[in-house]
Image (cartoon, rainbow, N blue to C red; front, side):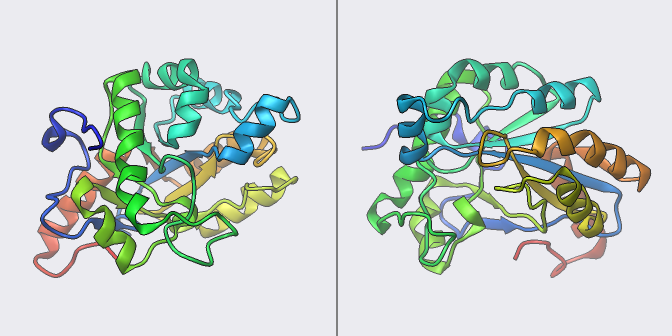
Length: 257
Protein backbone atom coordinates (compact mmCIF):
# COMPACT_ATOMS: atom_id res chain seq x y z
CA UNK A 1 0.00 0.00 0.00
CA UNK A 2 1.27 3.47 -0.88
CA UNK A 3 2.04 5.46 2.33
CA UNK A 4 0.01 8.59 2.92
CA UNK A 5 1.24 11.82 4.52
CA UNK A 6 -0.25 12.63 7.93
CA UNK A 7 -2.99 15.17 8.62
CA UNK A 8 -4.04 15.09 5.00
CA UNK A 9 -7.43 16.74 5.59
CA UNK A 10 -5.67 19.82 7.01
CA UNK A 11 -3.46 20.29 3.97
CA UNK A 12 -4.18 23.21 1.64
CA UNK A 13 -5.94 21.93 -1.47
CA UNK A 14 -7.39 18.85 0.22
CA UNK A 15 -10.61 17.64 -1.41
CA UNK A 16 -12.98 15.02 -0.02
CA UNK A 17 -11.86 11.79 -1.76
CA UNK A 18 -15.48 10.69 -1.90
CA UNK A 19 -16.09 13.21 -4.68
CA UNK A 20 -14.35 13.95 -7.96
CA UNK A 21 -11.33 16.27 -7.67
CA UNK A 22 -11.98 19.97 -8.08
CA UNK A 23 -10.31 21.31 -11.24
CA UNK A 24 -9.24 24.97 -11.26
CA UNK A 25 -8.22 26.70 -14.48
CA UNK A 26 -8.38 30.33 -13.36
CA UNK A 27 -9.60 32.59 -10.58
CA UNK A 28 -12.14 35.42 -10.45
CA UNK A 29 -11.83 37.66 -13.48
CA UNK A 30 -12.98 40.77 -11.67
CA UNK A 31 -10.03 40.64 -9.25
CA UNK A 32 -6.46 41.84 -9.71
CA UNK A 33 -4.68 38.80 -8.31
CA UNK A 34 -2.84 36.25 -10.45
CA UNK A 35 -1.05 33.00 -9.61
CA UNK A 36 2.50 32.73 -10.93
CA UNK A 37 3.39 29.02 -11.01
CA UNK A 38 6.50 27.03 -11.92
CA UNK A 39 6.67 23.37 -12.88
CA UNK A 40 9.80 21.47 -11.80
CA UNK A 41 9.83 18.66 -14.36
CA UNK A 42 12.01 15.58 -14.35
CA UNK A 43 11.49 12.36 -16.29
CA UNK A 44 13.52 9.16 -16.20
CA UNK A 45 15.12 10.19 -19.50
CA UNK A 46 16.04 13.61 -18.15
CA UNK A 47 17.53 12.00 -15.04
CA UNK A 48 19.56 9.67 -17.25
CA UNK A 49 20.97 12.68 -19.10
CA UNK A 50 22.00 14.20 -15.78
CA UNK A 51 23.75 11.01 -14.72
CA UNK A 52 25.57 10.80 -18.07
CA UNK A 53 26.65 14.43 -17.77
CA UNK A 54 25.06 15.50 -21.05
CA UNK A 55 22.91 17.99 -19.11
CA UNK A 56 24.29 20.13 -16.30
CA UNK A 57 21.10 20.85 -14.38
CA UNK A 58 17.33 21.03 -14.53
CA UNK A 59 17.18 23.43 -11.59
CA UNK A 60 17.77 27.08 -12.49
CA UNK A 61 17.72 28.66 -9.04
CA UNK A 62 18.18 32.12 -10.55
CA UNK A 63 14.40 32.05 -10.86
CA UNK A 64 14.03 31.58 -7.12
CA UNK A 65 16.56 34.34 -6.46
CA UNK A 66 14.62 36.77 -8.68
CA UNK A 67 11.33 35.96 -6.99
CA UNK A 68 12.93 36.58 -3.62
CA UNK A 69 14.64 39.78 -4.76
CA UNK A 70 11.34 41.22 -5.96
CA UNK A 71 9.31 39.66 -3.09
CA UNK A 72 7.04 37.97 -5.62
CA UNK A 73 4.89 35.10 -4.29
CA UNK A 74 4.76 31.97 -6.44
CA UNK A 75 3.69 28.34 -6.36
CA UNK A 76 6.00 25.48 -7.37
CA UNK A 77 4.77 22.13 -8.69
CA UNK A 78 7.43 19.46 -8.14
CA UNK A 79 7.69 16.06 -9.74
CA UNK A 80 8.80 13.34 -7.37
CA UNK A 81 11.90 12.62 -9.47
CA UNK A 82 12.92 16.30 -9.35
CA UNK A 83 12.68 16.37 -5.55
CA UNK A 84 14.68 13.14 -5.29
CA UNK A 85 17.39 14.62 -7.53
CA UNK A 86 17.33 18.05 -5.88
CA UNK A 87 16.43 17.66 -2.19
CA UNK A 88 18.51 20.65 -1.08
CA UNK A 89 16.94 22.91 -3.70
CA UNK A 90 13.48 21.68 -2.70
CA UNK A 91 14.16 22.56 0.93
CA UNK A 92 15.62 25.92 -0.06
CA UNK A 93 12.41 26.85 -1.86
CA UNK A 94 10.29 25.51 1.01
CA UNK A 95 12.23 27.55 3.57
CA UNK A 96 10.68 30.78 2.25
CA UNK A 97 7.04 31.44 3.16
CA UNK A 98 6.84 33.55 0.00
CA UNK A 99 6.38 30.28 -1.88
CA UNK A 100 3.76 27.56 -1.85
CA UNK A 101 4.45 23.96 -2.83
CA UNK A 102 2.41 21.55 -4.94
CA UNK A 103 3.12 18.36 -6.86
CA UNK A 104 3.30 17.43 -10.52
CA UNK A 105 3.27 13.60 -10.55
CA UNK A 106 6.13 11.24 -9.76
CA UNK A 107 7.69 10.82 -13.21
CA UNK A 108 6.01 13.40 -15.50
CA UNK A 109 4.26 10.81 -17.64
CA UNK A 110 0.92 11.69 -19.19
CA UNK A 111 -2.42 10.69 -17.69
CA UNK A 112 -4.09 10.48 -21.09
CA UNK A 113 -3.00 9.81 -24.66
CA UNK A 114 -1.87 12.53 -27.10
CA UNK A 115 -0.20 14.73 -24.50
CA UNK A 116 3.03 16.31 -25.82
CA UNK A 117 4.62 12.91 -26.55
CA UNK A 118 4.90 12.16 -22.83
CA UNK A 119 4.97 8.51 -21.87
CA UNK A 120 1.60 7.21 -20.68
CA UNK A 121 0.92 6.22 -17.06
CA UNK A 122 -1.03 2.94 -16.84
CA UNK A 123 -4.35 3.56 -15.12
CA UNK A 124 -3.43 1.26 -12.22
CA UNK A 125 -0.34 3.42 -11.50
CA UNK A 126 -2.07 6.81 -11.62
CA UNK A 127 -2.95 7.02 -7.94
CA UNK A 128 0.60 6.23 -6.87
CA UNK A 129 1.92 8.83 -9.34
CA UNK A 130 -0.08 11.42 -7.43
CA UNK A 131 0.42 10.26 -3.83
CA UNK A 132 4.13 9.36 -3.93
CA UNK A 133 5.42 12.91 -4.57
CA UNK A 134 3.12 14.28 -1.86
CA UNK A 135 4.79 11.87 0.57
CA UNK A 136 8.24 12.98 -0.64
CA UNK A 137 7.36 16.67 -0.35
CA UNK A 138 6.07 16.15 3.18
CA UNK A 139 9.19 14.21 4.16
CA UNK A 140 11.58 16.81 2.76
CA UNK A 141 9.82 19.99 3.83
CA UNK A 142 6.83 19.38 6.10
CA UNK A 143 4.94 21.77 3.80
CA UNK A 144 3.13 19.42 1.44
CA UNK A 145 -0.22 20.47 0.01
CA UNK A 146 -2.91 18.69 -1.97
CA UNK A 147 -2.47 20.97 -5.01
CA UNK A 148 -1.68 18.82 -8.04
CA UNK A 149 -0.98 19.64 -11.67
CA UNK A 150 -1.20 16.99 -14.37
CA UNK A 151 1.88 16.71 -16.63
CA UNK A 152 1.18 18.75 -19.74
CA UNK A 153 -2.05 19.86 -18.08
CA UNK A 154 -3.64 16.79 -19.72
CA UNK A 155 -6.37 14.73 -18.12
CA UNK A 156 -9.72 13.12 -18.84
CA UNK A 157 -12.60 11.63 -16.86
CA UNK A 158 -10.79 8.32 -16.40
CA UNK A 159 -7.73 10.05 -14.91
CA UNK A 160 -9.85 12.11 -12.53
CA UNK A 161 -11.64 8.97 -11.37
CA UNK A 162 -8.34 7.12 -10.89
CA UNK A 163 -6.80 9.82 -8.68
CA UNK A 164 -9.97 10.63 -6.71
CA UNK A 165 -8.77 8.81 -3.54
CA UNK A 166 -5.76 11.16 -3.36
CA UNK A 167 -8.06 14.01 -2.32
CA UNK A 168 -6.34 16.65 -4.44
CA UNK A 169 -7.33 19.92 -6.07
CA UNK A 170 -6.23 19.85 -9.71
CA UNK A 171 -4.62 23.12 -10.78
CA UNK A 172 -4.51 23.92 -14.47
CA UNK A 173 -3.64 27.23 -16.10
CA UNK A 174 -5.02 29.71 -18.60
CA UNK A 175 -1.77 31.49 -19.48
CA UNK A 176 0.94 29.35 -21.06
CA UNK A 177 4.13 31.38 -21.01
CA UNK A 178 5.62 29.44 -23.91
CA UNK A 179 8.93 29.09 -22.08
CA UNK A 180 9.27 25.35 -22.74
CA UNK A 181 12.06 24.84 -25.31
CA UNK A 182 11.89 28.54 -26.20
CA UNK A 183 15.14 30.34 -26.99
CA UNK A 184 13.70 33.85 -26.91
CA UNK A 185 13.01 35.77 -23.70
CA UNK A 186 11.09 38.33 -25.77
CA UNK A 187 8.63 35.66 -26.93
CA UNK A 188 8.06 34.46 -23.35
CA UNK A 189 7.45 37.99 -22.07
CA UNK A 190 5.15 38.95 -24.93
CA UNK A 191 3.14 35.74 -24.84
CA UNK A 192 2.65 35.93 -21.08
CA UNK A 193 1.74 39.60 -20.82
CA UNK A 194 -0.53 39.49 -23.88
CA UNK A 195 -2.66 36.68 -22.42
CA UNK A 196 -2.70 37.57 -18.73
CA UNK A 197 -5.68 39.16 -17.01
CA UNK A 198 -7.14 39.26 -13.52
CA UNK A 199 -7.60 35.73 -12.19
CA UNK A 200 -5.03 34.15 -14.49
CA UNK A 201 -2.90 31.16 -13.55
CA UNK A 202 0.44 31.48 -15.35
CA UNK A 203 2.59 28.41 -15.96
CA UNK A 204 6.36 28.63 -16.36
CA UNK A 205 9.15 26.10 -15.80
CA UNK A 206 12.09 25.87 -13.44
CA UNK A 207 14.73 26.30 -16.09
CA UNK A 208 17.35 23.92 -17.38
CA UNK A 209 17.79 23.10 -21.08
CA UNK A 210 14.04 22.49 -21.43
CA UNK A 211 13.33 26.11 -20.48
CA UNK A 212 16.59 27.94 -21.17
CA UNK A 213 15.35 31.55 -21.25
CA UNK A 214 12.84 31.59 -18.39
CA UNK A 215 15.26 33.24 -15.97
CA UNK A 216 16.00 35.96 -18.53
CA UNK A 217 12.29 36.62 -19.09
CA UNK A 218 11.11 36.52 -15.48
CA UNK A 219 12.18 40.03 -14.34
CA UNK A 220 10.28 41.57 -17.27
CA UNK A 221 7.25 39.36 -16.64
CA UNK A 222 7.11 40.44 -13.00
CA UNK A 223 7.53 44.10 -13.94
CA UNK A 224 4.88 43.78 -16.65
CA UNK A 225 2.36 42.24 -14.26
CA UNK A 226 2.83 45.11 -11.85
CA UNK A 227 2.52 47.67 -14.64
CA UNK A 228 -0.85 46.11 -15.47
CA UNK A 229 -1.89 46.45 -11.83
CA UNK A 230 -1.87 42.67 -11.32
CA UNK A 231 -0.70 41.16 -8.03
CA UNK A 232 0.97 37.74 -7.91
CA UNK A 233 -0.05 35.74 -4.86
CA UNK A 234 0.19 32.22 -3.50
CA UNK A 235 -2.28 29.66 -4.71
CA UNK A 236 -4.08 29.33 -1.37
CA UNK A 237 -4.70 33.07 -1.19
CA UNK A 238 -5.66 33.10 -4.85
CA UNK A 239 -8.23 30.34 -4.38
CA UNK A 240 -9.51 31.93 -1.16
CA UNK A 241 -10.29 35.03 -3.21
CA UNK A 242 -12.05 32.79 -5.72
CA UNK A 243 -14.09 31.26 -2.92
CA UNK A 244 -15.06 34.69 -1.64
CA UNK A 245 -16.15 35.66 -5.16
CA UNK A 246 -18.20 32.48 -5.47
CA UNK A 247 -19.99 33.19 -2.20
CA UNK A 248 -20.77 36.74 -3.31
CA UNK A 249 -22.18 35.54 -6.64
CA UNK A 250 -24.14 32.68 -5.13
CA UNK A 251 -24.65 29.05 -6.20
CA UNK A 252 -23.57 27.93 -9.65
CA UNK A 253 -20.79 30.50 -10.01
CA UNK A 254 -17.75 28.29 -9.32
CA UNK A 255 -14.55 28.58 -11.32
CA UNK A 256 -13.81 24.89 -11.58
CA UNK A 257 -13.84 23.45 -15.07
